[in-house]
Image (cartoon, rainbow, N blue to C red):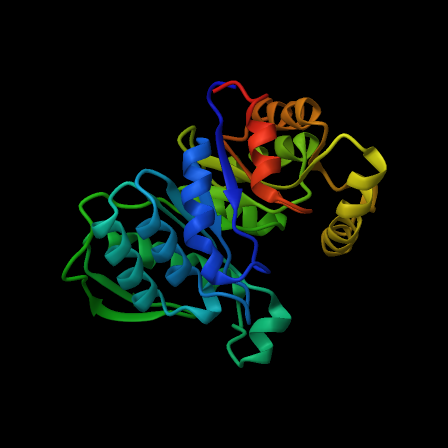
Length: 290
């Protein structure tokens, strides 16, 4: 399946001590990317990325996503620069709004989520480029900060966002957009239009997360997916049966990846649910033309 990268997520519910072995096995199976999660109360995204990078030789590791309210842009840029210098060309940094209720629960909810995300992404990207940043913004203040050790190969910074104004913002300030689970081919046309409205050019990447369950028994696949698609549908404000997944027999699941690719996805990241996720991944990859 030419011109599409295949990634796999290390799910937030999986214990962190299992990450090195999972990353090595995923790399051996031939995937391009491994994505780690930073949700409040689960694992730290930067530390998880460091573990995955250190355990592997060639995988690109994505952070999906660092919540801007929880991460000082100065500290985030320092952390990302460290990883990018030690593992050049192998990091993608995702930044998003964070779940509002979670941010409120730890006292960091911003007055303007849009301003905070824009100022964070702008300043992090500039710092990673080695620039001196002077910013007295609505949410971020940096008084002449420069990184002593900026990376020679600057990692892409992508915005993990969902709503229309945030997608326009992603097109304006980020290197790419990370699209949440449940969005299918029919959604990508409007998403591409919104990031283009924000100013995105052809180099702007679309990375699509997707729930995946590979199996030949449709009832069992539906049973395994149900709690995930129900919850995601409620969050997205759409019926459960409109939550897109890469699922079913391996050949049919591969068709789902192909449909996302044909609709503009440059990378498809599988969030595999159900037993033996690596076995599911291996079965699916046999039907993906690479």
